[in-house]
Length: 301
Image (cartoon, rainbow, N blue to C red):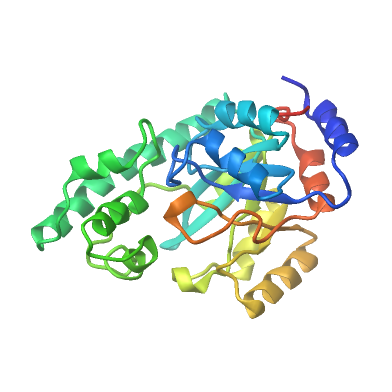
């Protein structure tokens, strides 16, 4: 595996100034609907040059995405979307290029996944008790083997039974954080998670921090604390950020001297998000790669 500096030099030589970069996607290793290799193939069809595979709390899709990237001519930036919690608010922290063997990071991710599994069992039990057509076995069937389980897999079962037309409608109703069926799960504090990612050589970038349509959002003060802890960037351009939210995120990034990114948050058929609908500038990717010390780019070619 090449060291980060080598991968960085290769990247800057091979990418054109107009390269299209999407650094936030999901495969069926978490809550996407496609294999990692298929996500990369779809990215190639969409005209992307660089893709970040950022499944929730797992690194299991990295190798397959890398192999597909070599075949498709798409450079894959390995990442993780780390599930965090701040005062009851869900916070998603993208971790680019961390050491996938870092023991503290792996232990935290494992704790989150284990807690999520038992949490889903409790949510399914509550839903079934009120007559919703769902069993935990069905939820497992909807997820790929060894996937990081989450509420989207419950949503998929309810969609299959015609209770809701899509995941989004299920999340707006019975799967929302305000629903009586919602059950919390273990998730680290985002400042601690930021420190942990940096210690693992990774580069933290907060995902869609002001997406109010998802529920309550974090404060500017929290992002300042995360920046002090080593956070490098803010995902500004995201379909769940409206014009005012993008302006707010961009202004805050400027004030805190943080990198600005844009991404699709692609989930295959699980969400309407389309690959490349928001993209990241090369200068922002450069800044991320310059700070990565955890691992080389798997797909430098």
